[in-house]
Image 1 (cartoon, rainbow, N blue to C red):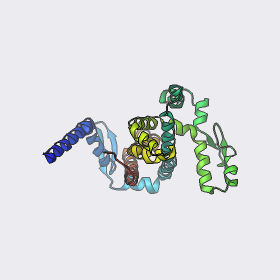
Image 2: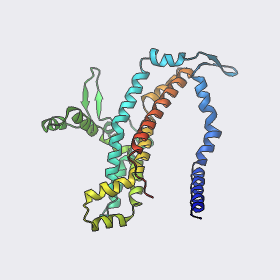
Image 3: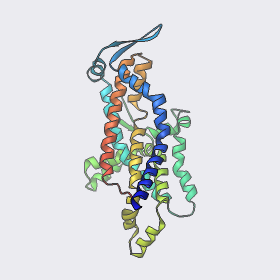
Image 4: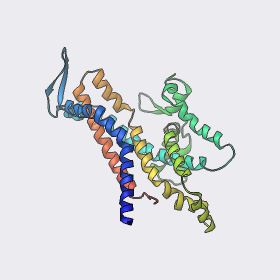
Length: 302
């Protein structure tokens, strides 16, 4: 009887999981599957527009050879996009978790504090951020600008004199440069942390208070309670937020702009499709590696 109950419970969970992903699955099969594989076919052909629509001529790997060995900007823009992701994702995850822990505490004015935290997220929304590219908001989002000689000039929120202070403290040069660059990008980090903070807040509020009460009775400090209870309980959400942050960092950058310009300005759809598929492959590899590494440390409470 126990085995039958367990099997029926497992089947219910499987059915619930399938019902949860079924809207996306049906939407992909009906709306996205055909253009998805059609774009892969375009990447091996040269697409020419004509009166009947378009015609394809097989070119093999010529489009991929073009973006790697002929185009001087694609690999550079792709490398910059990956480097920015590597720098920003850990900072966004740390800031989101730190902020969520603070906002989950009970104190007066908690609603007002949450509104203040999410205010930069609202200000950086698509409509408001594009009202004026030369306003103060835009100057904050671009903390440093590069002139024609390659020198950087500080604008908005910058690290100022943090670098020499950290160096006098004996910190490693690479660590100092990473911390100073994080300060320079603080507004960007805040504006990209809204969804992650909400997810962490939901996870923190779902933790049973009895766990903290038992730990307090055993004499555990707040520091110990965080690392022994809070962090393990929300570790599955770290994977969720990491995946979301990685995808969000690749959503709109110089590579996506280059793909769009190649297709709709230069009308070179074959090369554009090749760029898109290489971009998709790089993002997929990064996601697989990230999820594989983080999932080893995830704790699931049953």
